[in-house]
Amino acid sequence: MNKKERKNTPIRAVQIMKKEFFANRFGVKPRELAWGIIISQNENSEKDLNAALLFKKDKNLFIDILNDKISPLINICGCQTTAVKATFNRTRCGYSFKSGDLKAFISKEELEKAYHNKLFNQDLAAEAAKLQ
Image (cartoon, rainbow, N blue to C red; front, side):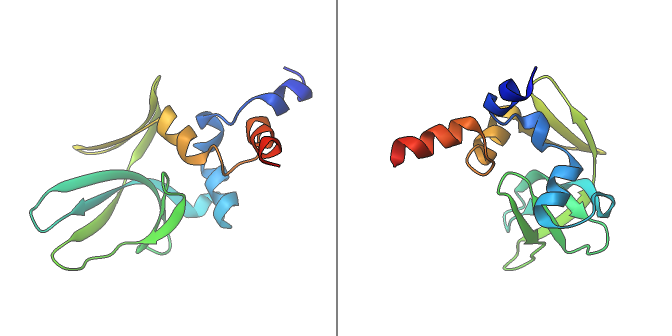
């Protein structure tokens, strides 16, 4: 694939799901990040598991991958949020995070949908040209 063909290809999930990508995006060093799972438990004891990147030094912050932001671990009104380190594996359909019995998954489609308009690519440039 030559340079021109690479410029014309849309952003792919495999380009995003790297510690280096998120470290560059949020201004930290890749070695300061660890893959993890965020466990949110509401007042009815219902659990929600989400894949994230954890900050090794600041245990109260994490990068919410699908919402593309740094968030704090907040415990209010009977809701508890905790973070655990996880192993990260690429699968055919997306990205799997596992820590003991806990599992979280991000599909390639979810990731590409979340980031398609946040990174420059030819599709976005063509869309912008249509709007002018």
